[in-house]
Image 1 (cartoon, rainbow, N blue to C red):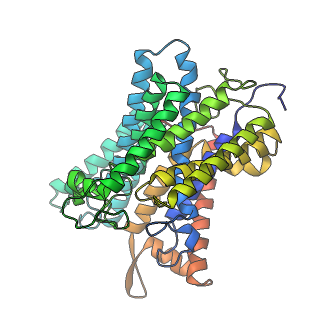
Image 2 (cartoon, helix red, strand yellow):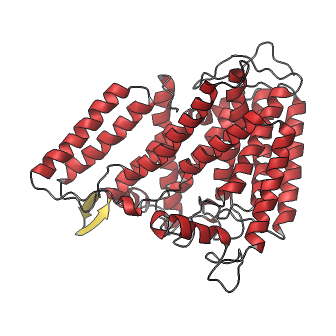
Image 3 (cartoon, rainbow, N blue to C red):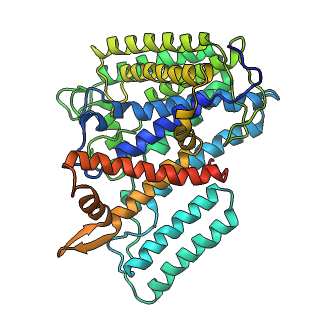
Length: 450
């Protein structure tokens, strides 16, 4: 089927929206002590639907790279292209750090009146939103007002405990996205699809060799079956130190240094997909704009594209599963088999969305995911800030102190449902609330991006 006029590849927006909605859903249960198995990460080896989410997002980032850069490259690789890539990577990385640092003081230990602390937190969050919305001057005023308020209380003799930079986690979701976007974009600029394929295969084999053949200092046996005695975990502890790693894991970081190598390949698999959608006969790559970007968007009409996505997705899925018999699927280590397996699933999911939406034209069901997809960064960042604030706010109920989130869960959900169903209901309501908030932005055509 060839459309009469070019239009956006809506399926990519929908796939992005489904992925970011899933990420927010699994990150915000009513209680971490009662969660359905598919909504939890695998403990170590193995895989659950929750483990699909992050590689799907990196795959989508990869698909967007040739789409975003193809129009710019018509004039050749210029300094402006490099500046755009590097500045965008830096902003995404900085945003990941910034989100964890707001409000720049220890909320629990600082003795400022509670309501004022909450307002300062909201002030910094509002300033960040306005900055990302290109309202830099207003953002500066609000951030300055929040900082001034803290300074006034400090001068008045209140105890203010600064944010502990010495224990700040350096890796993270946005940080890994930033690094993968930077490196893979540069690879895309200077290689063709065949070279990119070779680079991807080589990186997966090198990572496999490093993780299985290199001995870890201080360990009698080096094995990826052990969370501590594997090379990726040892490098994280040695370079990042435990103070700057994910506290829940302690001995490794799921977004650590060495495991970023195979994560690059997840992104490369997306680049290869995006390049194919652009280059195949019948694809359209002209200067049409999507809802949130000024970049061209590929249109690849025809069921042959869906068949191709299904075919290559099935091949990668099978190869990834076969490799997992030797090198187990492991999200925390981002094993080579995990890369191929999840890239195959990503191709299958994109292929289904493409066939249903762009080929068959069934779009009505996808509107919520389009709303999420065009504001994925805003959804991730500000839903996370909201969850943190709800965990910081302490209230007293029935003579016991609890968090606002805990009080809402207990009184509005746990009062009528079993713990596991109440936890799921809370997560669903949380994402529905954010669907409404994202709809407000979508309705006003406010798209947050860097």
